[in-house]
Length: 107
Image 1 (tube, rainbow, N blue to C red):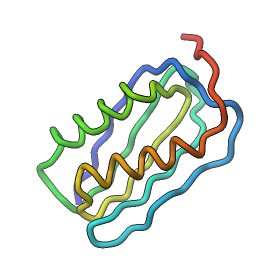
Image 2 (cartoon, rainbow, N blue to C red):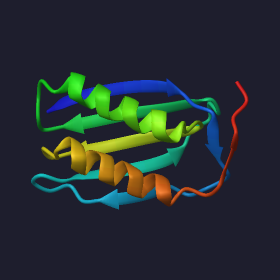
Image 3 (tube, one colour):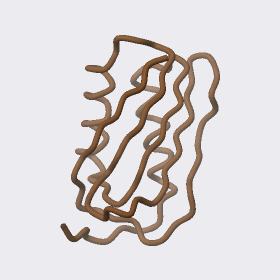
Image 4 (cartoon, one colour):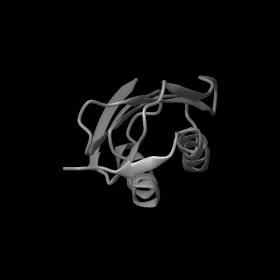
């Protein structure tokens, strides 16, 4: 198992919400949970993956997600069992689609 962590500054903070969970932990799949984060300008990502040595790919996928959504004030937790980058992006987009409307984050 490999643990990765990324942090991004965002500009779109969701209004109050309860944790969101999409996907399942299973072979070739992953689970994504989004929770509110006290730091209203940050998007923190914690990943536990069974596939070791793919940190640069995870960094690229998370950077792409953040560039498309610009989320702030959230913590993303990912439990991965070897999902492809396309499946990771799909699950992240599914979770983001369940977030309530966003407001501009204040630094």
